[in-house]
Length: 489
Image (cartoon, rainbow, N blue to C red):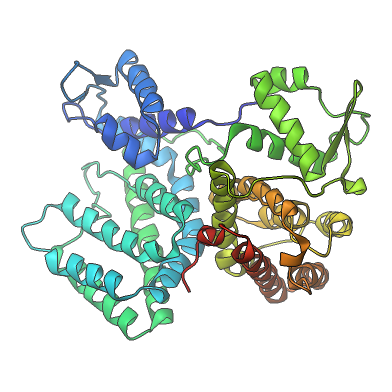
C-alpha cells in the first residue's frame, strides 16, 4: 500500500471539489479564473491547469478556450445541506483551533502597526458604504485583517488567514427555518472597524484581542446553529471520522523534506527499533510513490540532521545517539538556502507567538512523552539551537494539542523547522555565549513532570520564545542574512 504525502495538486483539487459539493459554486456561475486560483492558493499555473482539466473532465465546470469557465455541477439544496452537515465537526474543530491562533496574530500585528498601516485601516473603514453587496463587505473585512498581519512579515501567517477564510466560509442554503450565519451590514462592519482602529491607536491591544476572540466564538455558535437547523432537512449522515487537512503550506515545504520528517516520526514511534537498517531508497520509492531523487534527498537530509547515518554499500542506520550532525560548507547567501531559512524563521515565529496559548488548551499528558523528550534532549548540542534539539519538544507539543486542525497546522510547521539545520554551518562565534533556549528546554521537561497546566503552558511559551530569540540573534549576525528576520518589533 502506497503511503501518500499530500501534494499541492491534491490539496487544491480537494478544496475545490468540497466547494462544489457544499454549494459555494452554483450552476451557471462563472468559475474563478486560473489567475485568481493561482493567487488565492499560491499555486503555479501548471498545477492550476492540471486541476482545471480534471474538473472539466469530471463535469464540475465547462471550459471553452478564450472564455471564462462556467460551473456545471448541480445538486439539490438538500444534497448541498447534507455535505455541509457532514463537515459540522470539522468546522467546529477549526473554529476552536483558529481561536487559539488568529487573534494572537492580529494582536501582534496591531502592536507593530505604524502610520502607513493605520492610514490603510482608516481608508478601508471610510470606504464602506450602504451600496456595497454582501460579498464586497466581506472582501473589505478580510482586507482589513490582511493589513493587520502585514507588519509580521510572515507569508505562512498570510497563508493561514487566506485558508481559514475559505475553509470557514459556509454557504447559505435557504431551507425552511434556517438563518444565514454570515449576515453583515455596512453600518455594523464600519463601526467594528472604527472601534478596532481606535483601540489600536490607543494601544489597547488586550481589549482588541478579546474583541476578536469573542467574534470567533460568536461566529462558531452561529455557524453550528445554522448547520444544526440544516440537519433537520436531511437524513442522519453517517458517522465519519476524518483527519482534517484544511491547511496546506502551499508548496513551501519541499516533498523530500516532508518525506524526511515522515521518516523521523516513524523513528520516534519506535517502528524501526527491531530493525538493523532504515528502509532503503527503493523501498521508500515503493512505499511513498516518489521518484528516486526525492527518496535519495530525504535520506541525505536525515544524514545531515544527525538522525541517520548511511554506511557505504550497506544501508542507513538510526544515529540520533551518535549526534552525527555537524558543520558543513553551506553558502548561506544562496537564494534557495535563504528561502528555506525564511520558512524556518516564519514557522518558528508562529510557534513562539502561539505556544503558550495552545499549551494552555492541553487536556492530558501521555505518560511516554516525558521520557522521550528527556532522552532526545540528551543528544542535542547545548551550545546551539538545531532541529535535533527543537524536534523533541515540538513532537510532544503536537501530540498534546486537542484540536485536529491545530495538529495539522503545527505538523506542517514542524516540517519547515527542519531547515534550521543550515544554522549548523554558522560560525560558533555567532551563537549566544549562554544558550538560554537550551536551559528553557530543560525547564520545560521539569514543568511537564509537575503536570500543572499553567506551569506547562508558561514553560512551553518561554522555551519557544527563547529559541526564536536565540535564532534571531544568530541570523542577525550572519553577513547578508539580516533580511531573513520576519519580525518587526
